[in-house]
Length: 237
Image 1 (tube, one colour):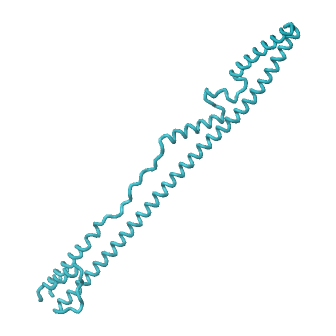
Image 2 (image 1 turned 45 degrees about the vertical axis):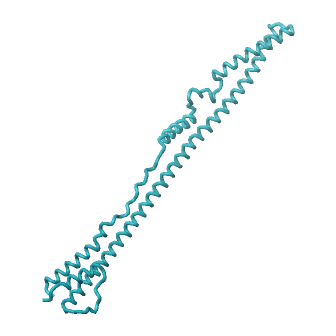
Image 3 (image 1 turned 90 degrees about the vertical axis):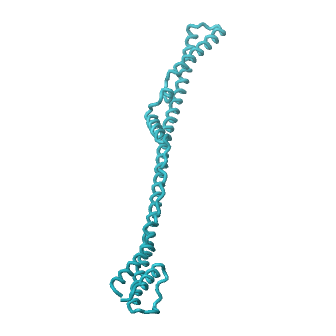
């Protein structure tokens, strides 16, 4: 077989290899789907900031005007109540003295003063207890508010961490799939090229020896048949 014949036969084999293996490079790799971004309610952070400030101010005793009387003694509301109570007490004592025929001077004035003082003392003690109870309630409300803010923040962070972990896990799986696909393509391509080169060598030797019935059956693959037919059609030199 001449050098021209070998070259033509080699071209046939290479062409067959290119036809059989051309599909490997065109295969699309697995593409990672676009994951939706982590969704956060637009009101979440706004409410967190407001509740955090509200709870902090409540612990410091800085309340909105509507609640400003809570936790305080001798408030304007209490003063109004005390005045009305004293007035009712004085009227009641005076009416009782008149029914008994006791003068409003002397004993009568002393009785009125005592009743007013006793009533005022009782009311002021109740006002103190009320203010103390309200302060305790405000303290608990402030602490519970900040605790709720902290719990909500921890839950939000846990959700973000879970989302990030799931996204990273999916990325790793996609990368593993791509690596396995690349390895399989390389192995298949190497096998096809090796088989084609072996077929080319066998056919060239048979043609050179002018063997009519080859002891080795040519490859039954389209590449082997193409190479064999090309070589067999060449003239002997």
